[in-house]
Amino acid sequence: MSNLKKYSFAWVTLGFLVISLIGHWVFGWFAYIDEQQAHQLPIQVSSFVIEMLRDTFENWQSEFLQLLWQVAGLTILLYVGSPQSKDSEDRSEEILKAILRNVDPDGAQKTLNEITKKYPNK
Image (cartoon, rainbow, N blue to C red):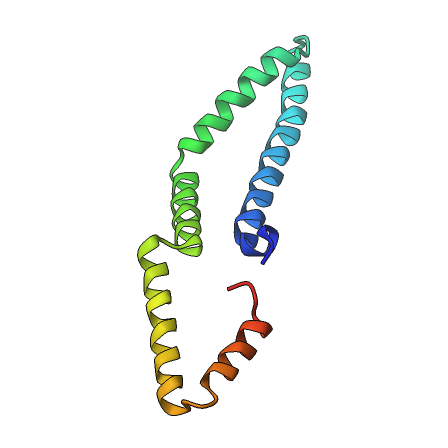
């Protein structure tokens, strides 16, 4: 399974994060220009960057983004899985193999080989 497919949720989440940051900075630029022109002040990229970095970090500290990160981080951790959950999956797989061998001792290996061919990237 490719990393793109395996971590698709993480890639989509990262994409939304990048899009939201770009949108925040683009619309912030337009608001900055309007504010500078309203006060008849020069438009300076350096002051805009400082202001936007401050706003970005303030937004990051807000409850919404903290909660969003907690949910996204937890989802990523659950999606990738912990070593304990992987051990449980291996154990379940061995139990299923043992049941198959008990139910059909003669054809069990053939069935397992067919499954392995059909799903090679466990």
